[in-house]
Each structure stands twice: as structure tokens, then as C-alpha cells.
Amino acid sequence: MKYRQFGRLDWQVSEIGYGMWGMAGWSNSDDNESLESLQHAVDLSCNFFDTAYAYGEGKSENLLGQIVRANSNKRLYTATKIPPRNRQWPAKSEHTLNESYPPDYVEEYVHRSLENAGLQNFDLMQFHTWNDEWMRDDRWFYKLDDLRSQKLIRAIGISINRWEPWNALRAVRSGQVDAVQVIYNIFDQNPEDELFPACRDMKVAVIARVPFDEGTLTGTLTKESTWPEGDWRNTYFVPENLIPSVERAEEIRKVLDNWNREHSTDITMPAAALRFILGNDDVSTIIPGMRKVRHVESNVAASEAGPLPGELYEQLRKFRWVRKPAPWSQ
Ligand SMILES: NC(=O)c1ccc[n+]([C@@H]2O[C@H](COP(=O)([O-])OP(=O)(O)OC[C@H]3O[C@@H](n4cnc5c(N)ncnc54)[C@H](OP(=O)(O)O)[C@@H]3O)[C@@H](O)[C@H]2O)c1
Image (cartoon, rainbow, N blue to C red; front, side):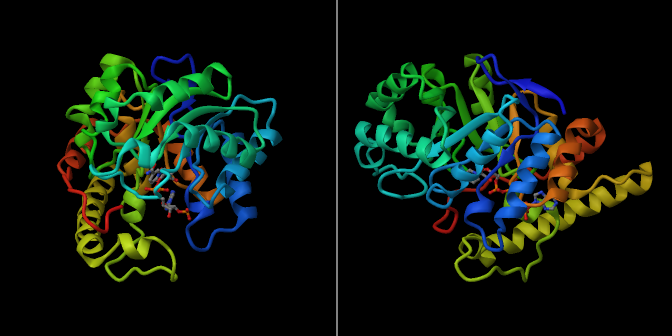
């Protein structure tokens, strides 16, 4: 496993981190299998874990706490998120800071998350939604800064709304945040336009989330894919989204098949998705969602394999797809 500097902080985080949403919210999760996968990731030197209060109302945070305690001899970096008080994803322009993250509520949820995890502190506390208009009212910052001085958290982050990478530029430029979490993958390359240069200038860490586009970039979804009732992917992968996403993923598969045939290699879709992101030095860590040991093994191996060969990387860059938030996109 290779490590990267986490922005301006002196943390060395694994290039492949761990996304912990699925294990506490998506259908067909099995806690034993999730814990086994988390432990396997630790054994393979993964040291950055991203969870959130909203992932099972503390369930995912609890699983993280178990893993941290079981590995007290290792430095594991813990990141969680405060849910918006109005429980609205994403933050819309009409949602005020007061409606979403009033200071007392922020403090209450930092304590709730610590309790869920059974930890003394979290390394990174993130807002689970963001609206750059909130920069007009910096009570959010002073509250988190106060909790940082109490050593309940070590750093402050923002999780940027889906397909709005520009909607945190003011926060990044303010110097008040240590990290941003943003969707960045073969399709969603537009964080490179403005967000990454700003993060580079301000030494703000970048957490690349949703590396597999919620599944399509693993090559395992079809135009007919459905999920058990209650699984959020039924509302996200509406035909308007699923069909063009799968069609594009099928084109990527053809590019990889050709490449593998010509170069006698066996680069899989998930490996290509992660190695594509590793090609960007602005990224501090990638957090694939994983609930299975075999997925942990295959994803961690991407770090050793390293960025894609330049020619293949250029071919995949052509799959850039700029999408706009839609009623189903959350
Ligand atoms: N608003 C926010 O702040 C926000 C929103 C979304 C996500 N996130 C964070 O980002 C993380 C990653 O995003 P995500 O989990 O939504 O989506 P993702 O990482 O793009 O995709 C996860 C899916 O890929 C599958 N997968 C993983 N490795 C695989 C492999 N090697 N081969 C085949 N399939 C594989 C997983 O299966 P299994 O689960 O069965 O292993 C799961 O179905 C989340 O877990 C969460 O921590 C944050």
C-alpha cells in the first residue's frame, strides 16, 4: 500500500481508503462479513475510514469503533459526517445554515457520533452536505474549531453535494477547511477544473468518493438491474440514469478488452476505475465502498499496480461526463 499526505496535515493516509456507507444502509449487508472485510483492509495496511452518522443512524460508526479498538496498535484515521438537521440531501440554495447545521446541533452530533463509535475523538469531522452560501455565516467554523480545541476532533471537512464540485470553492479558499470529499471517477472528472487547483493552492486534502459511480464502473450492473425494496439505488438508478451509465460502462469495457488483448494484461473494470483516480496527485485517498473481503483484496491491489499506463489513461479520459443534479440524484 502506498501512502499520501493528507493536505496540510501531517497524516500519511493510504491511497486506498474505505467507504462505509453500504454496510449500514444498503440491502444484503452482513455485519460479520463487513467486520471481516474491514479487518482485512487493516491487515492490508488501509488506514483511512470514512463513515457518517446517517449510515444506519450510527451503525456504521459503531462498526468503525469496533475496528479501531481491535487494532489499537495501529494508527487508523477516522472520518465521519454530521447529518443536516433538516435531513435533506443535497443542500439546496434555499436551505439556511441555521436549518441545516446550527451550532448547538453540531456540538450535539459530534458527541452522538463519538458515543456511537465509542471513541474519544474523530480525526476528521465533515458536514454531510454543503452550500457555499453558508460562508456568509461562520458560526459553523467557530463551533467546530472549539470542538477541535477540546480535542474531540482533529480536522474539519466538507462533503460536497453530488455533481456540484464548484459548490465548495469559497470554503476551500477561506482556509477554514482541511479536507473536501468529492465524487471523482472516470465519468465525473470536473473536480479537476476548479476544485483541485484550489485545493492544491490551499493544501486542502481531497477524498475521492464514489470511485465506481455507485456500481456502474465495476461493470456488474445491467440495464435491467434492480435492488430489494427500500434500497436507495432503486431511486438513484432510475432508467434515465441507469441506461446511459451502463451503456457508457459497456464502452469502457470494450476499451479495456482491446487494451488487455493487445498488451496481454488483465486490467479489470474495478481496477481501471481506481487506477484512473490514482493518476491524479491532487487526490489524497480514494474511498471505495466495500463489504466483501474479495473486494477489499482487489481494491487494495490497485495501489501496488499504480496509475494506469499513460495511453490507456488518455483513452479513459474521453469518458468524461458532466452531469447536472436531478431530482433523483440526491
Ligand atoms: N454525500 C456523501 O458524503 C457520500 C455519498 C456517497 C458516498 N459517500 C462515501 O463514499 C464511499 C464510496 O461510495 P459508495 O460506496 O456510495 O459507491 P462506490 O464506491 O462507487 O461503489 C460501491 C459498490 O461497488 C462495489 N464494489 C466495491 N469494490 C468492488 C470490486 N472490486 N468489484 C466489484 N464490485 C465492487 C460494492 O460492493 P460491496 O458493497 O458488495 O462490496 C458496492 O456495491 C461510501 O461508502 C461513503 O463512505 C459519501
